[in-house]
Image (cartoon, helix red, strand yellow):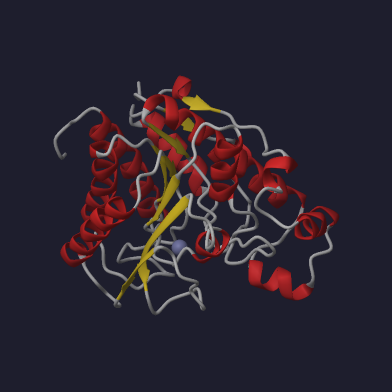
Length: 306
Ligand SMILES: [Zn+2]
């Protein structure tokens, strides 16, 4: 039913209970896509956990060993902000496998979406901000190792700066990073991306879209990737509990269309990941993510705005 593949695993859910991070959203997004006849179960692929060889192209061996042995220090646990038990570890390894699979399928179909992932705050040697390992970086490195691509771009519209992405690819000319985010928000510090669009508090749709559009032109002026990984956080939404921007649901849908249309114009495939989303009502976060998938479909099929 969809002209591209979705990637999802029921064990993406971290089962965090009343935590601000609603990790049940992955299931809710999947269920909404099916219930609304946007996708059929046959459009959805089930990932395997990433292999450690894939993870270790990005992360320090010592950090990964300490995760697996359950010996992260108290301060490491604290900055991660989620419990690091076996269920959590499996969920992050599955999300990384999911982003690899989405990258591979995006190269075939023009688009693919991992209904998970986008853990852009993970650094090579530590995790933070609900992000244990960096699924997008792991996927980029795997596609490069398989010689499917040489050059990738990461476009990150989560309301929080993509600090892990920027740090991991800082000295790497093969990966171009763009982050558009609220300046006065987590994380601090913000290591430089290739393009950082630091936004003032409470910016609305029109101003946001004009800054993003200009940033996308500038990115493609400077760099020609063979794939884009899109970190499409739902948290620039005006009702978000961890965000301070004022985008509407329509503005967020237009944001996604804009990124995808730039990619289409340049004939560059897009692998989508979901990243953050902490709206007061989980249903809004789910709607924003569902709309991202619909925007990708409409751009791929050349449908006008709905
Ligand atoms: Zn975020």
